[in-house]
Length: 472
Ligand SMILES: Cc1cc2nc3c(=O)[nH]c(=O)nc-3n(C[C@H](O)[C@H](O)[C@H](O)COP(=O)(O)O)c2cc1C
Ligand code: SF4
Image 1 (cartoon, rainbow, N blue to C red):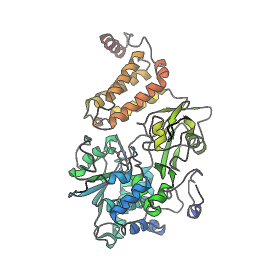
Image 2: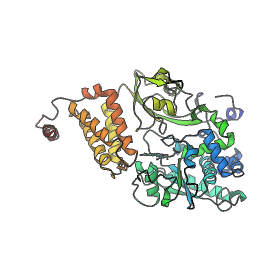
Image 3: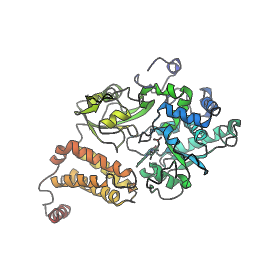
Image 4: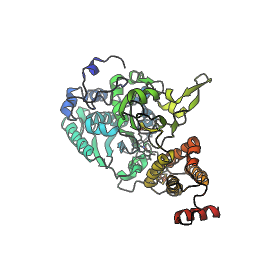
């Protein structure tokens, strides 16, 4: 990061690592900081809103498109492009929803924004609402964040008192109300169409896409923009720097900064804001997180939340250069960006980097993941409802030493039958970890099986397995 006189004057209770670039987390753990509007205004807060409301709404969208900002909620879809999907001849109300459900395992970034810097999120939201013409917006906050909901509600009241919200905000003639909606305590409430159903007061059953792409048919069947907390915060900085200026941060097509949340088997897990693609896997895990625990080696990493495909620490990848030639990239040299992680067969997802060291059996890791997805399936689609439970039952047996090698084949086949055959991307979220772990750790999984499992008549569960296999 280049020398920044403002940043260098800021002190932190937990100082950021020198490889960090604090844009969104500038105020997180900052000495003397608090979430009040007074403190935010002292620091130049809401100046970008004042600037944005003097622009044409379409010009704001253009800046966001130019910035190259990609969504930080999981899919990495370009934010400005999403906004243009609102039908041009639309006559219905437009809604904006801030997705603060933060439910992807391994992800813990949005909660710090909600708790420590709610006005940054509100400023980004208000600018975004002005750009897309939304007069009503919602912040859908994960049920397990009650304190965050209180803080954000207070921040909304403060913003209204200062005329940043409400009728005729900042004397622009533009009206905007923002409401907090408490989540329903399920992972699937973070999926945008499940979230919309939940907001409408129903079970969070995701809707099929097409036709229910929210930008066209969202909340109450009206155009609705759903963006992640972190994505909306970035909008404020795009206005401050201009789209082109913002795009200078990070790497081409992978612009800006993003917050990575590192958990698992490293000495110093935590959150780190980096320029996208400017930090490698080695720098992240060794320089920033202190490397593996003493006497241990890193075996694998799940780089973008539990639903992303696992990467082995000893593998390398053949990647294509822009001129069509090929190059080899080792795991440790992967730059943490959207496109490279995708080219390596995984994804940047929600930024939740889960580290697994050589003390862990991979069967245990997979069972842990399967248990989560079996519990969280909403149950609408048969492949997901039945398959996620079936996969958990198999890995339950695996960790108990009661699975046969044939079970691994069944497990793989169940995952393939879920993948691509469900209403929402939960199907992939639950099957990709299974597919990738089997592809990369088949020998270790097989080593945890037992040819004789299912043949022990004293064990009724094993006996049922024997009968099941015999019937096959
Ligand atoms: C099962 C599932 C869970 C999701 N959970 C979240 C979540 O907790 N927070 C979030 O922002 N996006 C989540 N998403 C992604 C949202 O559907 C949506 O793409 C995102 O909020 C869009 O925001 P963005 O474009 O700013 O990334 C989830 C997606 C799926 C399939
Ligand atoms: S894929 Fe799973 S979570 Fe998504 S709608 Fe179908 S059953 Fe529900």
